[in-house]
Amino acid sequence: MGAFMFKFVGLISTSLVMIMLSTHTAYAASKTTTPLFKDDEVLKVKIIAPFKTLTARAQKSTDPYEATLSVDDPAKSETHAISLSARGVSRRSKELCDFPPLRVEFSEKPGDTSLFDGQKRLKLVTHCKRSERFQQYYLLEYTAYRLYNLMTPRSLKVRMAEITYIEEKTGKERLTRLGFFIEDIDDAAARNGLEEIEVDDIARNQIAPSQAGPYAVFQYMIGNLDWSMHSGPDGDDCCHNTKLIGAPIDNSFEITPVPYDFDYSGLVDAPYAAPPDSVRVRNVRQRRFRGFCAHNEETMAAAKALRARKAEFLTVIEQTKGMRDAARLKAANYLESFFDAIETDEKIEKNLLSDCRS
Image 1 (cartoon, rainbow, N blue to C red):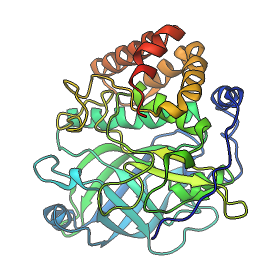
Image 2 (cartoon, rainbow, N blue to C red):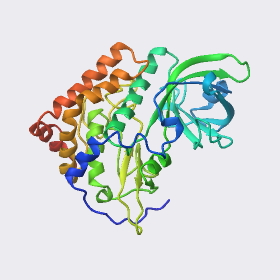
Image 3 (cartoon, rainbow, N blue to C red):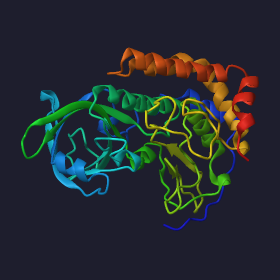
């Protein structure tokens, strides 16, 4: 789709940035939140599919396969015909993963009483490697989504699931691992009274500063360098590991960047993760602020607003189900180092704003 012409709506005051960060629970009871993402209970799910064929072809093909998804809970049992396909880019590589991330598409619209009411297509983040140890990285990625949910309702919700994968031809269980579903961007936008904006790229001054500041602070928090809030890789639509949402008013938009895919972050520290060639850091654990200087006022406000909320963010790590003690401690220490970096205005200037991009 060709780039749209946008009219920049204008700055929202710094005080509103702080209000946005302090009222993080207001959206939780939104009537437009779909049933799947209304609570955090771990789902028990079975998926029957030709996994042997799907995984063998995943590196070169995202062709869909007929499959069946069932909620394995007597109190709310339901079964759906679905199409299942591999998705993503790097994680489809056999050098990185034995098992690809998946896309679930419902063959028929789930009923009004279904847990999947309102769903058409869903991303499913899977375990990548067969080793049970390896799923810790994706529990950490799940945690990253939850951390951003604390910062702003303009974020993607997630739902953890214990998934049993069953080979269609033999009926045998391949394995059971934790994974998680990601809210569709259209649903996240609707939950906030907005809609997705699909463009090739946008100018930096078309991003709402009140949203860009917290976005950049969050990426610094989790040590993520693998993103862009205004452009995508050559030949791809905007934006790299970011979706855009906004409210069209007389052909004008206030654009909010919504991040996703955090497996290359320092918080997750996946064994295959490496920093971008364009950023000089030792490894993905080394933070580097990559926000724009034009948003420094909003960045400062966002970082200051987070100082008093350290315990809330650490609680997210403590409450992530299935995480081993060693992974939990490592993640908590990494988050602690972020709060040390924003402890004073002077530290924010030194650690974040001094590295801003013009």
